[in-house]
Image (tube, rainbow, N blue to C red; front, side, top):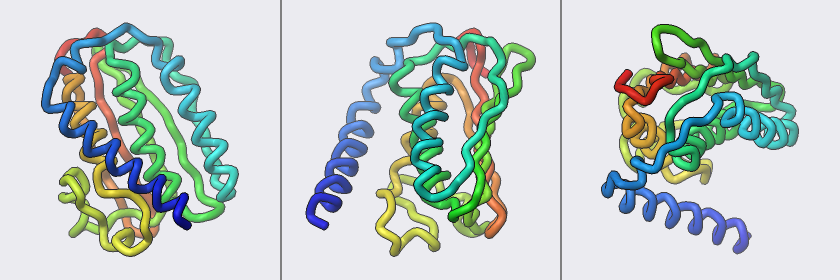
Length: 184
C-alpha cells in the first residue's frame, strides 16, 4: 500500500514538473522526423501487455508509412497518457483500437475504447488541469493531468485533439497532426 502510494505521488510530481517545464516552449523545438509506425508499435505492445492483465483486447490497424516531425519523447508521452486512460476505464473483456488515416498532408490517429465513457457534463472539462470525471473521482486513478498534458503536447506540435464519448459505450480520441511539421 505504501509502495503504491509512493508510485502515485511520484507520478503526480512528475506531471507537475512537466507542466512547469512545458511553459518554456524550447523543449518542443527538439523535433525529429520519425516513422509513425516506429512511434506507435512500441506503445501498442506495452498497452497489449497491460490490457492482457484485464482481459482487454488491444489492436491496431496497419499504420500508413508516413513520417511525422515531432519531439518523439513528448509525443509518445501524450499517446501514453491517452492509452493509459483507455486501459484504466475499459472494463474487463473490452477493446481498445488504434488506427490512423492519412490525407491532405495530415495524419489522423484514432484511439477508441469500449470503456465506461464520459458523460456530456464532464466532456467539456476533460482537458482542464486536475479535473476528474464523476466516475473516476473516488477510484484513486490518475491525477487529472494526463489529458491536459496530452492536449498541450499535441497543440505544441501544431496538432489538434478531440474527444467524443458515449457513457457506457466508450470513448474516441482523434489526434490530427501534420505529416510535414506545418500547422494542421
